[in-house]
Length: 320
Image (cartoon, rainbow, N blue to C red; front, side):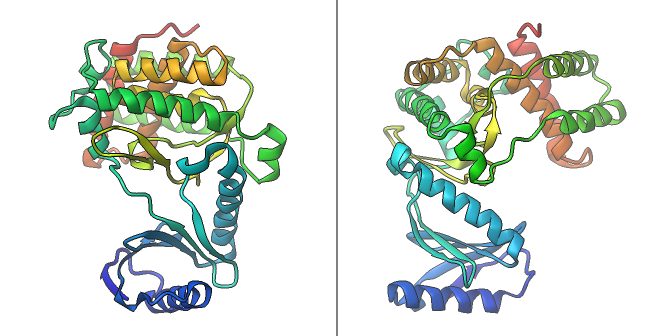
């Protein structure tokens, strides 16, 4: 195996490679010596990218428990979601190795260009305007993403999801941190007033929880080039029991026309009414959340401030 890239060289890479090679030979008889692979250290596990597969290697029991939980969830969702999830080809508890088929297609920022039909993506201000561009491929993705999220949200009952060990987190601790960041690093009165409304709204609100993906942004989608067909949802690591809007809040990132079309498809599939303004509120809340995740001295911080301001001014939902 020829390792062409590594990142974050802790822990030692050699034992990881040996374990992966042994597992692939033992389980599949693969002659993997000719493979080119990208092996990176990602937070709490190794990530291995092969031409046709993606693997994860946990270095301790806690990491393997997280992979076990995601593996169990993928199995439980195989029937209701089918090919919209990557297929597991190897799950080796002894070596703590998990391998999936790699789904080919566009991912991340490439999807934005396809949705908007341009090499230049719209500003945050334009994304929250009804005239934001939406290509035919973007229209197809909106419909398929809306339907797929509805299928995911109805796939498992609450008790079944709890039985898989999925958490039901509370946003309040994050909002506490956002308030601290705004008080010390952001003087914009628009954001101060907007965040005060967010805090009051969240404190008053609680609704039934469903299984949600937790992080269905562009980097966790795989889309067919040209047509916009949704090929897969990736990375169920953040799956949890939460309100539906926790997943739907990301739709606005592709523009209002995209979000509205996706919500229409979602309502038709789920058979439930979703208030547009409530999804907008969750999107504004998400913009504020990012202020807690990025250091004020990081170059991205000013971009997040601009995003939050555009969301507060552009979506302007009622908060009561």
